[in-house]
Amino acid sequence: MKYDYLVVGAGLYGCVFARQAADAGKKVLVIDKRPHIAGNTYTENVNGIHVHRYGAHIFHTNDKKVWNYVNWFSEFNSFVNSPIADYKGERYHLPFNMNTFREMWGVKDPEEAKAIIEEQKKELSGKEPENLEEQAISLVGRDIFEKLIKGYTEKQWGRDCKDLPAFIIKRLPIRYTFDNNYFNAMYQGIPVGGYTKLADKLLEGIEVRLNTDYLEEKAELDKLAERIVYTGPIDAYFNYKLGTLQYRSVRFETELLDIPNFQGNAVVNYTDRETPYTRIIEHKWFDFGKDENGKDITGTVITREYPEEWKPGDDPYYPINDSSNNELYEKYRELAKKEEKVIFGGRLGEYKYYDMDAVIEAALQKSRELV
Image 1 (cartoon, one colour):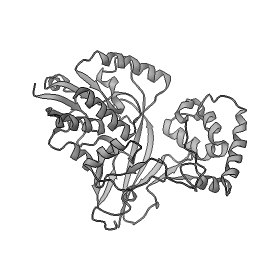
Image 2: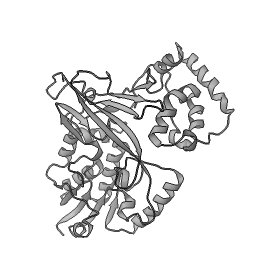
Image 3: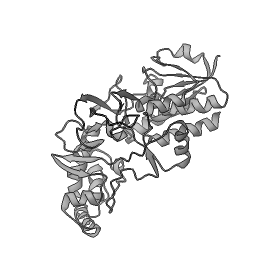
Image 4: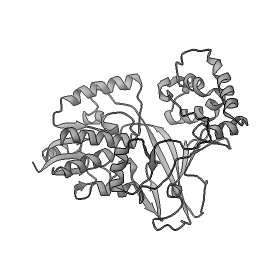
């Protein structure tokens, strides 16, 4: 066997594991069925703008070790995510904070805002929330639910809020301060030069083969390495023999515009049900409207995101972690335990939604265990 590790998938999990293994003196081969590295964090340069091909990725973490790790490979800018919500032309700041409450009700201080929310929460009469709609109202009241949660969530998941489990929004960021920092994390930003540059540094000196579908060439590829690190869908690995895990997918429509400014913000969410897309991203503002030389960019690139029902062959984005899917995943996980040569990792391999910092920490932890 030519390699110690075959890493299937050049997303963040695969890149970090490969880097750690290579630094420990292991021979590593990384493959990906796409024509590029970096997975869903892939960014491409379009007229000096780093376009997030698969949706906005804003790095944020409270884990200093993870922050120091990524900064070893890439300089990060100081971008702070402060999205805007558009409800039928009305504009609101996110996350829910005093700016939101002032725009919604005209209140001036936290006590006024709290009083309105507490009054609206009474509609549940202390009942334990049984679905997402009731959970949202129990946290922020009816007005904010109707304008800023309901339509967006139903588009995102393709289901009525009354048919979605309460745990999806068990916690909502609610602040009685004028703070528009969405993540409120100790460390946040975006790699200078884009995420592809970060992935390229992580894979420096490591052999990479693109346009290579592991499952189509599994028998031959398995012969190349002692161990396999598999970051693809766990049900696909087993040829869906127990059934298909469900996901939500996203379709992206990107436009290059010959204007300097389309919406004045990196992210604008469209929270009414009638608008077919959930948000518009204006990519240049992730880098403050400047190219890598610090010069103002004259044009702009926008992307509309349309959530869609997933079917085999589509890109899976968001696992639907309801009880039936989690039960099916546990059955696949039992099968995975019997694959002694294979490590299943990442968002698809573990069927869970991971923030980027959690993906990196998981890959670092697994590499510490194995390497």
